[in-house]
Image (cartoon, rainbow, N blue to C red; front, side, top):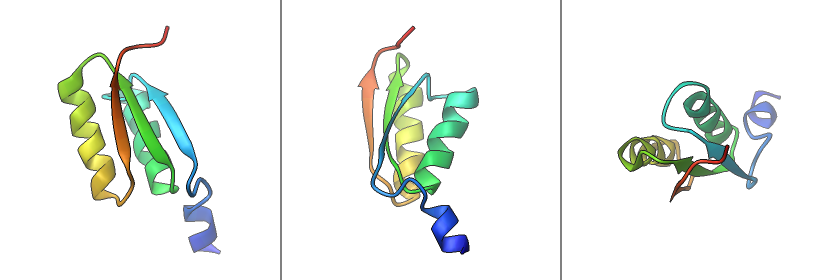
Length: 70
């Protein structure tokens, strides 16, 4: 049962805005742990690349797009 809960987002894609800190960072990491591929959307490329590397260490793919949706 635990394995099923850990992969609820298996092979889904998630675009997370402002994902270099705070809630955006937490959501990015949680979704990656749940099996999603993450599109990191952030103005700060240094922070975005840091989060993308963290996600890749979890075994998921991550793409960085510079920008911010408001």
